[in-house]
Image (cartoon, rainbow, N blue to C red; front, side, top):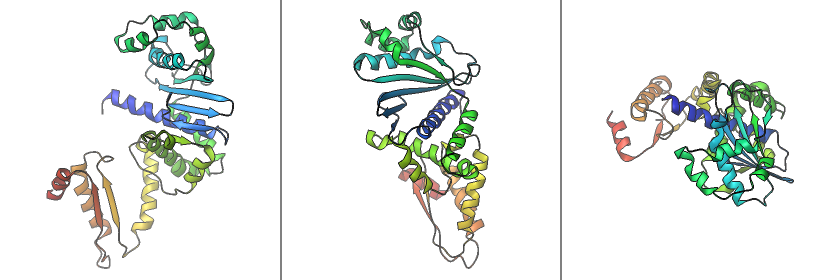
Length: 300
């Protein structure tokens, strides 16, 4: 995987973790939209609305204005169209050498500098803002929040989760990864209503899922090796029981190198878990993929 791809995935993971952190710190009447209409996270409370964009800059030691040109312009464009709405704009960003928990407000001079940018990728935003003169009011609503690293944010979120009645061990190995997986799944829903969550209903649903989710997103978490061991243990309790019909669904969208890995997995499974005479139920492997891929797997 390229370094750019690594940073992109890291950015998504950070967004999902911050979303969960905001949810845990919210009140029961607060509604949070994952991948909101305005920003990465839209938070609606009885007193107003907050639009949060997340940026993870692990490779840049200190904050510089140029690193936030694009998110500021995006928020400014939204504000231009919604000046009467009660919306606060927040940029939650991590820079290694910035003090965690500190905040920064932009000056008029800094905003003017952003609007004067000649960068080609920003041209459409700057063109849209031509003639806009209400920057001072936008600045009253905008703040940068400097956040912790991925590792430290994960630790803080697990503490918050433990405070909701989950044991630290279960929070770390089951409910935290399941929460991140659930938020990632919500983020790809096209229907905005399906991306809306509240603390109580989300946690209630989380408590009902006792198996650790292993996905492309939980794979990026800090304790992934520990999560795999926990999932093996959970699966072992089921696989060690004899004479049971088993159906295993394998989705090409979630498995890298699908055509190569699946025949090996099936062979491995049969030799380890279906080789005893008393295991008289043949396992069913259901492949979620196109017909050509299925045929190539079958032939291998």
